[in-house]
Image 1 (tube, one colour):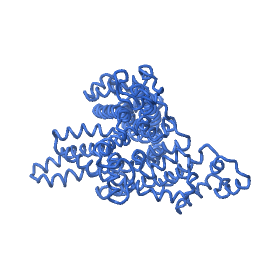
Image 2 (image 1 turned 45 degrees about the vertical axis):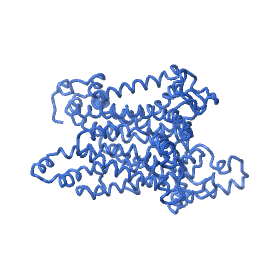
Image 3 (image 1 turned 60 degrees about the vertical axis):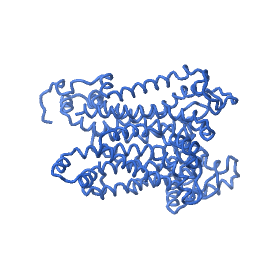
Image 4 (image 1 turned 135 degrees about the horizontal axis):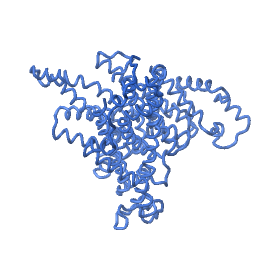
Length: 305
Length: 293
C-alpha cells in the first residue's frame, strides 16, 4: 500500500514534468543554442533519447540513491539543496502539529464535556478561525505580535535552537490556526456524541466516578474520529507550509519549491514534490498504524471510518 | 428480481423535494445570514468592476499607502490605487476560480459516484482505489506542480485543484448513491423498463441533490482558501489584475511599515466569504442528514 502509493505518486510527478512544454536542451543551455557536440553529450547524460518508461526508471533509481539531478538555476545537486532546507520545514510542521494536537484536542474535549458559555464561545471562534487562510493569519500575526507588540521577530530562521523556536512561533501558529479550529470542532462533536451514548448513561447511573467515565468510556471512543481528522490535517500541513514559509521569509522546502516553480527549475520541482509526497504518504500510514493501536477491532490494511 | 407487477412508482418515490427557499429557511438564522453574505459577494463578483468608484488598475505612486478619506473610503494601496475599487473588482477572479473547481468536481464527482454505485464490480473498485492514489497528493502541491509545468495562472491552478478534490466528492456521494440504488423505487423503475441513464439522471441524482449542494458549498470555501494562497504565492492570478490573494501579497510590505489596512482588508474579504460558505455548507449538511433516509 505504502509502496504502491509512492510508485504512482512518483510516476505522476515524473510524467507531469515529462509532458511539460519546452525543450530540455534549451533549458539546460540557458536559452542559448548549443553546438551539436554538446547537445549529444547532454542527451547521453540525461538519457533524453531513451523511451519514456526507461527515463522514468533512470530517474526513480537515481532518486532512490539520493540523486535527484542538478538545479539549472543554482548549478548544484538537488539533494544537497533539499537537505539544507528540509529541517526548516520539518521543524515548522512539527511545531504546528504539536500546537494542533495540544490545543485543538484540548479545547474540543473541554467544550464537548461542558455545554455552556465556553462551549458556545469555542464554536463561534473556531468557525471563524477555520476559515482563515494561513497567509492571512501570517500577516495578522506579524502585524500584532511582531510590529505592534514586538514580542516575536517578523521574518527569518534564527541562529540557535532557542532563537529558532522564537522565530518559528508565529509561523507555526499561522500554519496551525485553521487546522486547530477544525480539530477542535470535530473533537467537540465526537466527545458530545459519545457522552450521550447509552453505555455512558448506564455507567453514569451506576455511579462510576466522572474522571474514570471520561477517560475510559468517552475519550477512548471519541479517539477514533479525532485520530482521523488529526491525521488528515497534520498531513496537509506538509504542503501548506509552503505558504507560511513564503509569508515569513523562512528558508524551507516549500518556499524553495515555489521559487523553483516560478523559475521553471523542474529538477528541483520534481525533487521537492517527491520528498513532500513521501512525507505525506508516510504520515498517512502512521495514522493507519495508530488506528490499530487505539482500536483493537481494526486490523492493519483497512482504514477505520 | 421478485417484483413482477408494475408498481405505482408515485407511491414509492419520495413525495416531495423541498424548494430552495424552504431549504434555506431550514438552515436557521446562521445559514440564512451566510446565504445573504454569499449573495452579496456574488453580486460584487459580477458587477464589481461597474460599481467600483475608480479604475482599479490606475495607480498614482504619490498617493501610495495614503489612508482613508471621504472620497477614497479605504485609502490607497502600495501603488497608489484606490483600495475599495480594487477590492470590488478583485471579487471576480477570487470567486471565479473556486466556481470552476466546484463545477468540475461536482460534475465529475457525481458522475463517478453514480456510475460506481450503479455498475458496482470492477468500476466501483477502480473508483474507490483510484481515490487512494489521489489521496497521496495534497491539492496545493498539485496546483504548484501545475504552475511549474504549464505556467502560473488561474486556469492551471483551478484544474489541478479540481483533480485533487474530485475523489473526495466522489467518495462522499458514492455512499449516498449506493443507498439510493438499494431503494425499492429504483428496482420498480428498472422492472418497468426505464433506462439506467434515465433512472440515474431523473431519480437518483435529484434525490441525493441536497448532499451534492452541501458538498459544493463546503468545497467552494476550501477551493477559495487554496486558490487565494496560490495567488498569494505568485502562481495564480497575475498582478496587476486585482485579486484578493494577490492584494495580500503586493501590500504585505505595508504590514511592516505601519500601513496594514490594504493587506488586512483583502485578507478580511477572503475570510468573510469563506466563513459564509463554511457555515452555510455545514448547515446544509445537517439539513440533508435530517431529510435523508
